[in-house]
Each structure stands twice: as C-alpha cells, then as structure tokens.
Image 1 (spheres, rainbow, N blue to C red):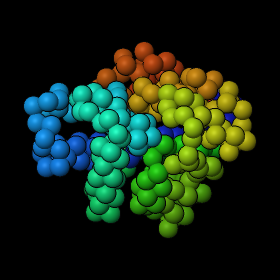
Image 2: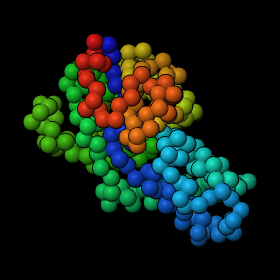
Image 3: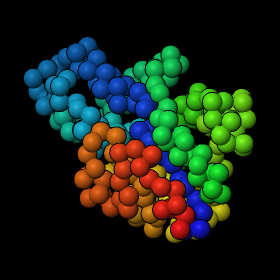
Image 4: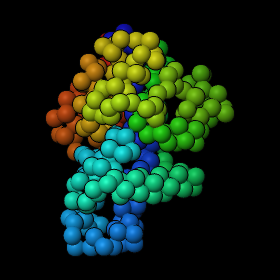
Length: 249
C-alpha cells in the first residue's frame, strides 16, 4: 500500500464550518461597537474581509495566530494584546452559538472519501488546530452510510471514524509548522512518509510537506493554484475526482 495513514484537517475539508463567518462577523461588530475609536484609522472595511483573505491568511492557524493575522492585515493597533484577546473571545462565543444551532454542513464527498479510505484498510487521524473540531464531528451522523460501509453503525458519528485524534492539542508552533501533523502520525503509529495529509489551506499544505508527508488539497473556493504553489501533490475540486487506487498503488 502506498500510504498507510490519512490525516484530515477538519474545517473546509470535512465540514463547511462557520469559522470564517464567525471571524468576519466578530471583527465587524467590534469595529462598529467596542472599537469605534479606530474609525478611519485602519485599513478595515467589512467588504475587505473576503473568503480569499480568510483562506490565505487565517484558515488552519491556531485561534490567536488567526486573530493576529487579521489584525495585522487591517492595520488594527494592539500594543498590549488586549484587542487580540477580545477578538478571540468574541469570535469563539459566536462560533459556539453557530455550532449549537447546527449552522454548518458536512461535505458529502469528503465524508465518503474518508470512509472509502478506511474500507481500503487505511488508518485515519483527525488533526485540526481548532479546539472546536470535535464539536463539529460529533454532530455529523453517519447512519445513511451504514448500508454501504459495514463498519459504520446506525448511531455512529463522524467523530467515531478516527483511529487517532489530535484536534485542538496545544502545540508550540502552529501551521505551517508540521508539529500537529507529526503528532497525528505518531498517534497512528506510522512514520510520516507513510502518511498523507488532506488539507484545504496553503498553511496546512506547507505543514504537511515540511513534515515529509504527501498532501491532497481540496480547492473548494476555486483557487487551486495557491495550493499547488504551496506544494500539494494532488489538487482536486471534489474528492469524487480522486481515485482511491491512485493513493494505494
């Protein structure tokens, strides 16, 4: 078998989570309420917080690193770190509320891809920097896949499918450092070279390659070149486009 383990990022890969929405709406609310004294003194405007900005600068990073990237991008001063902490707190509260209301969806192609890899004998790990990742996975039922995959029970959720889980583990260095993916490979009991990473963000792709792993990247927002430039071995717009045999031979 070409690879023995598959390491999955969560946000943007397995679920269309409301992370981007929470980051965007939290900053807009802060800039119009708590931080009104900054009006006209920064590069912030609501329409400048685009999906492209989120995926290129914020996605895949630990919470504080993502918040810092946004503040720096818009030139929002934070001399004592208080604005960073406030931004993180507001975004987290918004995100939990969105999750509890079920305002996210799981990507069918990605869930089926994961199940097909397990059926082929590959071990799978979850490796998201988000401490909320397990909340999403626990809310994705798999009953509709039970007839196609005998290892899926009628009450199982996506969280039950992983052989190892390092979601939200405290790491000294976030992506593009490979620390979290190396931890996932170790949790699977596999050398990095025997693992492939499944990602959607350039920082995640760079982390996979820095860790000596192959990388499958999903371009869900139609910008495959930035993933190729980051070093992805395969870039697809849907996991249905990638033959499992390609990864096994």
